[in-house]
Image (cartoon, rainbow, N blue to C red; front, side, top):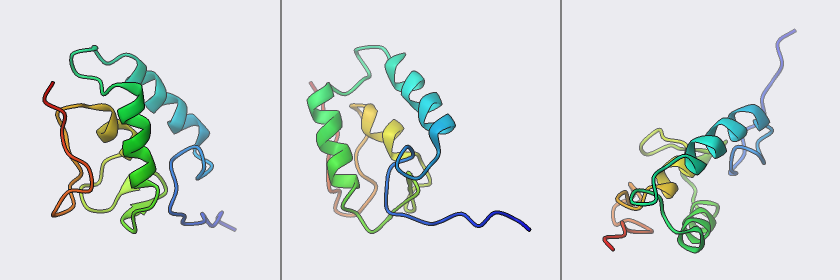
Length: 90
């Protein structure tokens, strides 16, 4: 019998996706400082995503990205219209 995956409004690690969460964490850690969001801003963005109805098992249902990667890039913003968090230009 196939395993049934629970759908949750959570980030990858909380969704039980430990392997993918580790891959994403490595990717984020490897981003150049000129591209990567400052840690405080990153955590704030993820906190906003964590309250969004469009978050499903670590994925944004609006754009299909893993929210941990989108939030980690300073030049990106939330895909919701209007965005719940915006890009960082500095």
